[in-house]
Amino acid sequence: MKVLVVGGGGREHAIVKKLKENKTITELYCLPGNGGIARDAVCVSIAATDLDGIVSFAQERKIDYAVVAPDDPLALGAVDRLEAVGVKCFGPRKNAAVIEASKVFAKDLMKRYGIPTARYETFDRLDAALAYLQSAPMPTVIKADGLALGKGVIIAQTLSEAEDAVRSMMADKRFGKSGERIVIEEFLEGPEISVLSFTDGKTIVPMVSSMDHKRAGDGDVGPNTGGMGTVAPNPYYTPDVAKRCMDEIFLPTIRAMAQEGRAFKGCLYFGLMLTKDGPKVIEYNCRFGDPETQVVLPLLESDLLTVMQAVTEERLDECPVRFSDASAACVIMASMGYPGAYEKGFPITIPADLDAEVYIAGAKEKDGCLLTAGGRVLGVTALGKNLPEALDRAYEAVRHVQFDNAYYRRDIGARALAAKEV
Ligand code: AMP
Ligand code: GLY
Image (tube, helix red, strand yellow):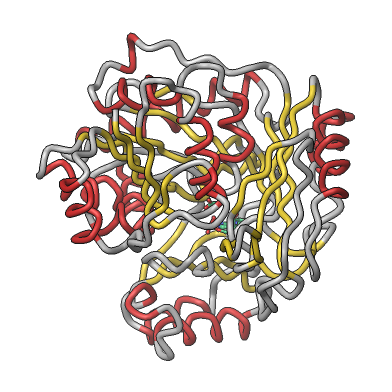
């Protein structure tokens, strides 16, 4: 079996490592991958958004199965293109990936089908958005409609911050076309929960829950990042909350998508907030989360390829999906300065006997040595019988992974641990 993974970050490294457990895979490729992934799969430098390049490669190498991991190729229709030449895929088609690619689509879907989410208005004219803000309660949340590398959400504390945000998106085109339409929504409060799920469009199987840490600094301060660490399971996701999510959010969402002629097949990610009125959807992603995947997949006991194929073939109802009841923690080691400017090119040392998994996000190989090449450089994931043990192991391992200018948060999991004491 020849398998191809599209993407090149820590999430793709976690997917590649998990797929490798399946011994029927004889050839495993990653496009473009990175210097660290190259130790586990054959990396070929074709960009994840180069659909022509990906399709030609898949045809030349006679790829049997492709996993498209990042949002942009999914939104561009990578799965449709690969399927058109007979390659089976894991990931939604373009018409379903819109659940992430357009926030206006996602919000309108939730409104039409009564799925709990923040109240909102959408705007495609600057003057109308500015007029609406005059009477909007603060803080308020302003979101660019399209994909914006996770940076298209601004929480404005005051009217003037909100006006600046709207102008930067709609007049200055800070996010290009993505900001031509915007959503202005109610500010919600409560702990956040990420739930990734496998769905074949009819059946939905939630994976173990997780908690991301999006802010750069300890204590959840500083700028938003792609994610500085994760823990799983998320203690706020109690059995009661899980049941409410299944009944009020997960099943209604996949039924709504099917009803709209946009059956979603792949990994559907629910970004949830547990408000005092119950769980509400903050965002949908049409893919595995990063760095949620780096704690969720290590806890998956079932074979990943088998589950993915069941999704593709729409027989997820017959496929057991088991997770360990252990805990996992992932600490992201970034380049000092991220998400702003940072230096790169520093050698990375990882001891061979490290008691943890290392997923490489931003590194390249030079003369047999890994050099830092990105903002988020790598994630160190450890498991434990409970969260404190997983966190101790992850932080112990982090002490032994070294590169110049490394920065990481010291408080990953603190909020989850505090929840357990309540
Ligand atoms: P998103 O890119 O949609 O995940 O948003 C990034 C982050 O902004 C989320 O993880 C939340 O922390 C925050 N956020 C988004 N929408 C809201 C909202 N309506 N109320 C409060 N915080 C929000
Ligand atoms: N960790 C959030 C995301 O993948 O979008």
